[in-house]
Every structure is written in C-alpha cells, then in structure tokens.
Image 1: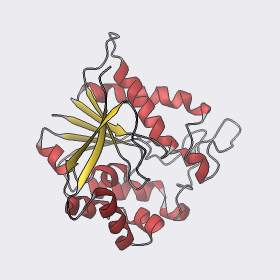
Image 2: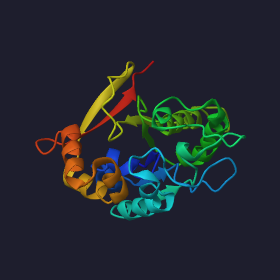
Image 3: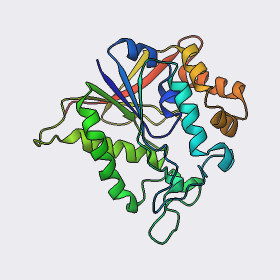
Image 4: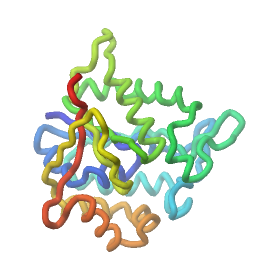
Length: 245
C-alpha cells in the first residue's frame, strides 16, 4: 500500500499521524507532502513568518519550521516533499492587504482570493496522487483555512485524471492535532487504529518552536497528546472514510 500523506504545514504530519508513520513505511512506503512551507518571497505574500502562532514571528519563521520538519521526518524511512507555498498568514491581496488578518480569520473558510491557489495546488498534487494507492488528508472541520484549502485541492485532484475519469485511489481523512476533536461528521465512517505513542511523541517534540509557542514546554504537550489519543492505556489514531453513495 503506497500512501500519500498531505500535511498543510510543517508539524501537521507528525503531530497528527506520528504514531502510524513507521507502520505505513513498512506496509509499502510513505510520501509526506508539506504544502505551505514556503518563505513567502513571491509577489503577494509577506515573508516575515507565521503570525498566527502564539509564539510570535521568530518562533514561526518558515526556515526554522522547515528545518524542524526535515529533522523530524528523517526519523522514518519515508519520502518527504515540500511544495514551498506560503501559508495563509503570509498571503496578501493585490493591494498588499493580508487575506487573513489575525488568528480568528485563520479559522474560517479560505478567502475568495485563494480560489486560484486551490486550482494551482490541485495541479501540483495530481501527479503525486496518481503514484499512490491511498491519500490521507486533513478532515479540516473547525481547524484552519489552509487545512480546508488542502482538502479542497486534494479532492479536486482526486476527482479527475487527464482522461476525465476519477482517480482510482482510496481517500481517508485524519484528525488534526492539536485542534479540538471535531463533531462526528455526517456521511463518514470513523476508524480507530492502534498507534505507537512513544514514536509519536518523540517525533512531535522535535518541533521545538511550535511546542514552545503553543504549549510552553514538552510536558503539557505530552499530556494533551496522550489525552487525545487514549495513551498510555490504548493509543489510537483516528481517521474517517466517506460512506459509499
């Protein structure tokens, strides 16, 4: 089973799915694609860092986050791909105004000005989707505009091939950490699988800037991850698949 894991930002793959990565690598191979890991050095974006994080600009600098992501993902024998697109907090309109002014804006649906970005991303994901048997993407319910944009772009890429037929690829939606667990989505079946909490936590703590910015230090982070996954009694990873039409 060749799996493709789509991560909106550096840390999303490991924070949300870290307890499954080693198993997936053994079962046929894993590619992790981090979408929004760019510096914001193109027209219409601001390159100063992730202003949506509590840790401030320095803690969220794209170069630092990329380095942490590379080091963490190197723990597993997987293929890592970065698309280099700028995250929501860096994107601006033609007049130089931020598309997402403040943390609350990041929790809403993608800005209309990002419609072209969704199509562009779908084009980038299309060839990757074709090379895999299963695609894992964020459920993106009450989480982050970038997460929903990734989901929409992936679903667009999954919807058609060059010949107009749907992609013959299985799709699963994962629960994003550290966001609050979503309400049970209608039209989906939930699946909980045993996961390796120790491996998950070790990898997750390598994102030191984000642990520090959002949790202050490792202990509260570990407590929240354990609570969300059921560790240490029985650590599970949660995903959803659509019900058959």
